[in-house]
Image: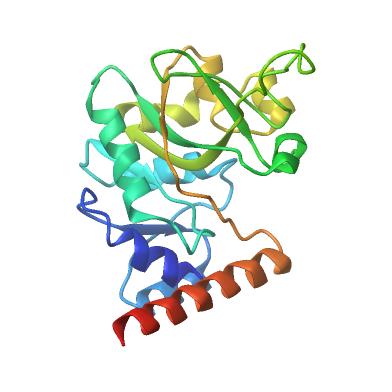
Amino acid sequence: MLQHVWERASQSRYLTDLVIATDDDRIRRTSEGFGAKVILTRDDHASGTDRVAEAASASTATVIVNIQGDEPMIDPFAIDAAILGMLHDENVPMGTLKKRIEREHDITDPGVVKVVTDHHGNALYFSRAPIPFHRDAAQDEPAVYFKHIGLYVYRRDFLLAYPDLPVGPLEQAEKLEQLRALENGFRIHVVETEYESLGVDTPADWQTVSALYEKSLLTKNMVSK
């Protein structure tokens, strides 16, 4: 699974380097086996962003992207879109992605994080609850809901300072690391994408992703013939 993530991320046009950050020596050995560059980190990080911050401390890159290792179908174009969304404003320290929700049950699923943004594409809030709350749903047009895609882009100085930011009550309640930035007054720019995030958190998730991957290979072979 991790190799698929690495191979697809390698197709991004705007990534100049790709490193796997892990605290597990088994993952290090496996990753080096398929040619990846690896950085071993501490094993006491509270979030993925904290781990990436440690790994980034050894880099001189001015912009760092945090790609989740459990999304083997990650779209390289989505990675590029998130990066480009950060480049228009040097004062934005952090960026991410959102996808319009099409499956109604995702709106109330706490495992699907929702995001609302302002007119400039900056995040107002992330929540496991349905946001926005549609008070007059019976009378108005249906509300539009957006799913947060857990891919992050950071400016280096902000990322290195992130582990020292105080954890607030919103992050503690929702268990969402990106809320630490908002609670401490930092902007997060959110780019809309058509990429449907498919993280692997359970054996059932793996079966779903495996079936989609096999289907994509079959389609590719049919087209090539």
